[in-house]
Length: 226
Image (cartoon, rainbow, N blue to C red):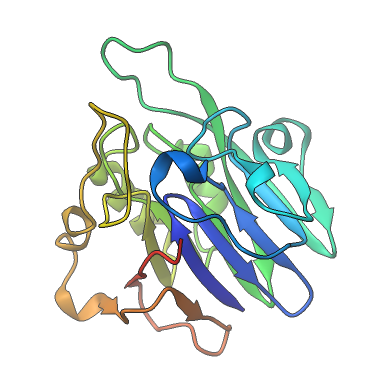
């Protein structure tokens, strides 16, 4: 399986029998290019967040609404089962009540992937109980501001125990945010771990299989392809 980070919370997941886009952004608003090929599935954590929901920017897809799946139960597309866990955005002073969204989990080529959506609150105990030891790769939202605090994120990762964490949704060189908005850089997250557990390949993609999973959790930093 190949995982490519396109920017913000958008990834391209390519397995032997399925291709998946996660949480596509609105390209004109955030400085990244759209995914440039038709895929089998788009799954999004929210139907109305322009940083996570632009399914029309990816061609030839079947759409999975993770928030609906979190309420109605798992769905299967092309032999891949998608399950979801309802969460909320972080409450920000002066803003409307935090919106709902969902984390989602799926397995491709024997590798179990968890996308954290736009989670803004600490992981619930029920979610941690369900996910502990059941995830190989976490696509982790690490921008801190407006989303889950880094303290709560690190605690949750310690409970879930993935082998690989790929940071997303942080301030990188390409990202443009609306005036007044800001995210932390990825270093705010990575400095919480020993340097020997950080992998900087300088690439946009990582190849993952069950046989190649590391013995302990590593942080793989990718370059945005978008």
